[in-house]
Length: 67
Image (cartoon, rainbow, N blue to C red; front, side, top):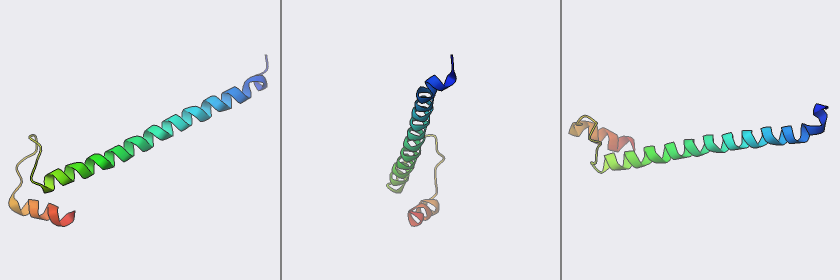
């Protein structure tokens, strides 16, 4: 059995795998950016995470200026 008989299938399988992995990486990156924007917006409105330490008023003002 020669490998050249199946080269089309092999190339298509690798191309599909690379495409799926590329789409997943892009999706995670875009979702990460969206989540960061949402968290920054919530912090600007004064809503913080329970696990976060309390910020001083000066620190909150700095966060507003940075955004």
